[in-house]
Image 1 (tube, rainbow, N blue to C red):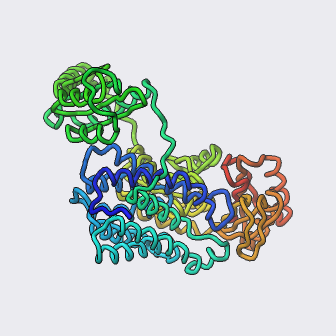
Image 2 (image 1 turned 45 degrees about the vertical axis):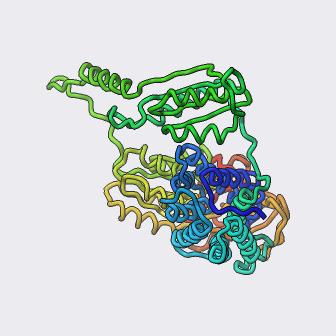
Image 3 (image 1 turned 60 degrees about the vertical axis):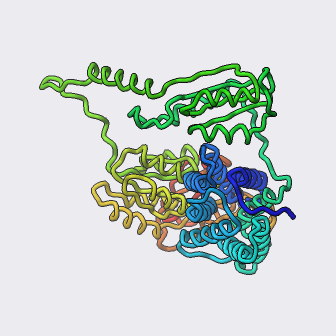
Length: 572
C-alpha cells in the first residue's frame, strides 16, 4: 500500500477532478435511486453539476496552497449548488475549507479534522437532520477518519478508512429509513458522497481514476477562452494602482518545436510554474500547441518558460495600468460630452424604475412561466423538477431585478436549500415562501400585496399554501412496490401532495381518478394545467369528466408546456 504524509495542491486538484468525473459518470445511477419511480430523480445530476462548479472555481484559482484551493472549491460549490443534495455537498466542503483555510498542504490529521468539520457544518445546515441520509454517511466517514489519524500519520490510510466507513454507512441507510428498505435502494445523496470519497481514495492510492471525456479546444476556442479570461479578470479594477500584476501576457507555444526545447510537455508542471508568476492564469492546449494568458510583473519569465517546451508562435504583452489610465481619461471626456442637461423645457430623462419588491419564482414550460407572470412574478427562472436552479441562478435573478427587496417562490422542496443560500449572498433583504408545488406557488402569489412589508407578504403568502391541494400526473420509470401499490414501468401515477394516490394505464384516467380523491364538499375551483406530453383535447376530456363529478365546481384549463408531468392540477 502506498504511503504519503501530505496532500499538496497537485493531489488536491486531482482528487476534485476525479470526484467530478466519477459523479458525472454515475449521475444516472444515482438518479435511479430515487424512492418514487418518477422521471424526476435528479440527485446525481445535481451533485455532479454542483461539483463541476466547484472544480471550475478551483481551476480558476492560481494558488498553490491547498487551503486556498479548498476555499475556491467551497465557493464554487455554494454558487453552483443545485437541489438539496448539492447544497449539502457544498456545506460539507464549506466546513472542510474553513478547517484548512491556512494550510499549504494537508497532513493525515488535517484531512481527518477537515472531514469532521464538514460533517458538523452539514448537520447544522439542515433544520431537521434525518438519519439514513448523506448526513449519516459523512458522520460515520468522519469518525473513521479521525480514529485512523489518531494512530497513524499516513494520509492514504486515513482516506482508505474514510471511504470504507462511508460505504458501510451507506449500506445501513435502508435500515434507518424504512421507505428505502421498502423500495430496495440506498440513499441517493449518500451514494453520491461515497463516490466522491471513492474517487479521492483512488487518487491517493495511485489507482487509475475516472476521467471526463475532455473536449479538446480548437485554436478559435482557445482565443475566445483567453479573451474571456482577460475581460473577467480586469472587471472592477478602475484604478490603475489596484492592478497588482500589470502586464497582460499571452504566448502561444508550438509544443516540441524549436532549438531551445529541453522539456517534454506536462500540463501540471507547465501550469504550476506559471501560477507562481502572477494571477488570472489560463492554460489551454491540444496535442500541438499550448496557449497561455497570465497577468504578471515578469513577462520575460513567461516567455522563457514557454521556450523550454517549444518555440514561440505568438507573443502579446499589454501594459494594463497604461490601458486603464487611457480608458479612464476617455470615459471622462465622453461623460462630459454626453451628460444630459436638465432645463425647464427639457428635464433630464429619469432611469427606468425597478420594482420595489421582486418576486422570483421557478417553473418549467413556456405556458407555465406565462401563468406565473400573469400572477405578478417579476422573474421566472426556467427550472423545477429535473432542472433545479443553482444558488447562483437564484442570486443572479435577485440582483438583476434591481429591486429593493425580494421574495423567492421555489415551487419545489428540493430548491429550498439553494434558495436559503441565495438569500445569504445577495445584497438586498430577501425571504422565501416555501411552496413545494406549482399549485402552491400559484396560490401563494394571490397573497401578495404591493403596499405590505416584506414580512407581511411572506406571512400572507405562506398562509395561502394550506388552502390548496396539489396533484401531479406522471409515469413510472421502473417497476417497484411502494405505499401499497404494485407499480409497473410506464404506468401513470397520480401524486397528491407528495404521496402516490393513483396508479393506472394512461394519463387521462390518472388525472380524473386523482381529482376524484382530491375534491371534497368544500372544493370550489379546479385548475388543470396540461403539459408538453399531452394536448388540449385530452385536457378537455379531463375537464368534462371532472365537471360530471360535481356540476358546481368551477374548472379552468391552461396550457403549461411543462415537461415530466402531463397534468398539474390544483383543488381549492
